[in-house]
Every structure is written in structure tokens, then in C-alpha cells.
Length: 106
Image (cartoon, rainbow, N blue to C red):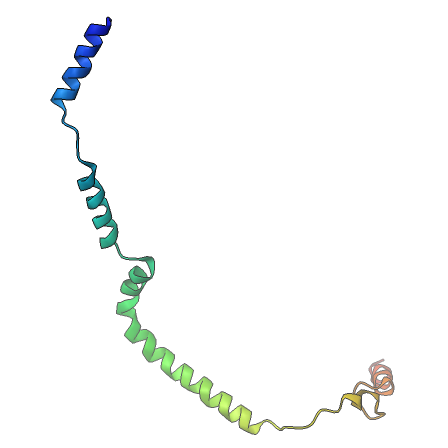
């Protein structure tokens, strides 16, 4: 193929196909991206029909946890910890009580 034929073919292709303006394409792409919902929004929309059923089941459980926590805190005895109680003869951690409990199990 000669250079003149190649130039003629390129010229005919350029004449037959007008150059496209990329601004319209870019604007269309960005418009489509902005229309899409984010991942948390899609999850929220998918779970929306189940929320009433979940709330009716979760509310009593949450209420019982709160009541149990408050009553447990009220019933808990506040005793002062003695850090040296480990060395006391009557302590659970005393060597004598550990040895005595081992002899009783044998």
C-alpha cells in the first residue's frame, strides 16, 4: 500500500466519523455514579421490611438485660479487697488449705 492510498483512507475515515465530545460521556458517567446508592444505604433499604419484627423481639431482651444488670449491681456486695489476705492462714490460697484439700481428695 502506498503512502497516498493510506493518507486517502485515513482522510476518509476522519471525514466519515465525526469526533465525539467527551464531556457528554463524562457527564453521563458521573450522573450514573451519583444516582447509585452507597453500600450502607442499600443494606438499610434491604433490612427495612424486617425492622418491625426485629424491634418487637429485641426490645424485651434489651429490657431484661437492663433490669438484670441493675438488680445485679444493686445486690452485689461491696467488700474491700485486702491484698495481703493471700498470706493469711485461713485464706483459700494459703498453702495449708491447698495441701489439705489435696489430701482430702486422695
